[in-house]
Length: 206
Ligand SMILES: NC(=O)c1ccc[n+]([C@@H]2O[C@H](COP(=O)([O-])OP(=O)(O)OC[C@H]3O[C@@H](n4cnc5c(N)ncnc54)[C@H](OP(=O)(O)O)[C@@H]3O)[C@@H](O)[C@H]2O)c1
Image (cartoon, rainbow, N blue to C red; front, side, top):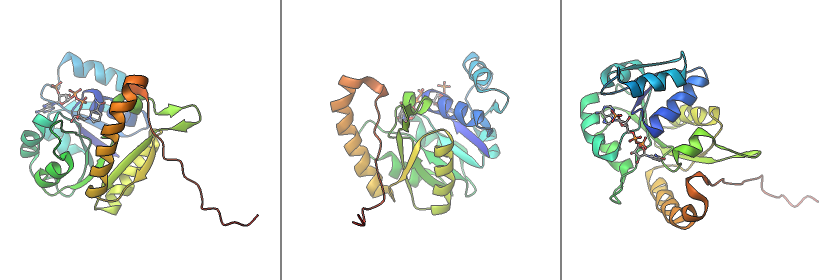
């Protein structure tokens, strides 16, 4: 697929690199596509990656990852304008307790918004493997077809996708994950993760 990443920092850089390594065509949309930072990122991401302006990346991508700081979200979504029914993956988090999901749903013009990756530290996305298991990536959104596409993009980089439904559920998960972060990160650092263990219901046929 053609994927645009608006943001080339911890989240955008890591996800873009990983998708490029899987054979996707990735364009990083940047304020300064010629910067040393972008040059180094492109070197690490290989020949499937390129960089351009935010507008060029948005025109290029069938899927657009929004991976900027919360303070930049409004300005960038004004700049991108009509997103032509493309899939927009929102991994942004706000630090003021307000919902970054509702903000992007309100501001993104004509986009199929899927919320994903926001519950994971970038270090976990860079390496989601814990022995034989991998970290769970929750996703939410109202468009099932868009969620199917994002589910595949999650699986391809070795994460375990779990669709939690719509915004209301995702907000509850974010709150819960924030609480757990306060308890576990002092002990395990940023590299710990959670996995939803599931199995077929026991039918009692023994
Ligand atoms: N870090 C994590 O582990 C983590 C986990 C879950 C969710 N998140 C969320 O993900 C989002 C990104 O976090 P991050 O850690 O990746 O931040 P980051 O490393 O600071 O990267 C932010 C990126 O936004 C870019 N940017 C800012 N304004 C821009 C503009 N006008 N046009 C194009 N690019 C612009 C920056 O480019 P410049 O280099 O030009 O400034 C930078 O590449 C945040 O909302 C955060 O809450 C982060």
